[in-house]
Every structure is written in structure tokens, then in C-alpha cells.
Length: 68
Image (cartoon, rainbow, N blue to C red; front, side):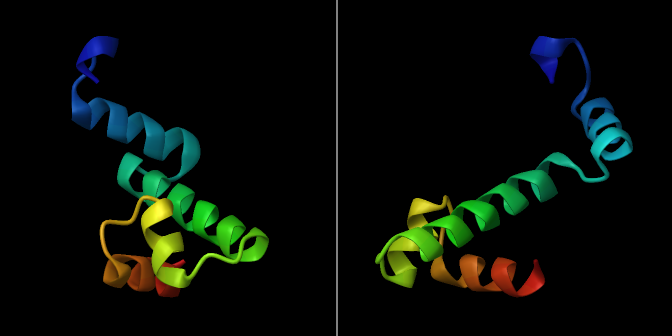
């Protein structure tokens, strides 16, 4: 945000207005999408998919997949 000359709050508001979600929600959706692709296209175990998708724990992965 600072490199763009805006405050973090301004960037969040603009993203929410333009895309309908803030940066955290967008990142979570991207990780969930990556996990879905890996589950469909590889033979990796779920734990490996969770970490390869950028989740910091299997619990975070499970919570996100249930919510999305």
C-alpha cells in the first residue's frame, strides 16, 4: 500500500469496492482454488496439498475449505 502511495485501509476499501472482497479474503480464495486444483490433478496427500497451497496448518486448510 505504501509503495502505491495509499494507506492500507484505502487499498482495502478500493479492493472491496472493485472486487467485492478485501485482500485477506482474496488471498484465502486463491489458496482454496490452488488446493482444489492440486487435489484434482495430483496424487498428493491432503496434508501436502494444504501446505503446498500456502496454508499454515491443516486446520486452517480444513476451516477454509468448509467456509468456501
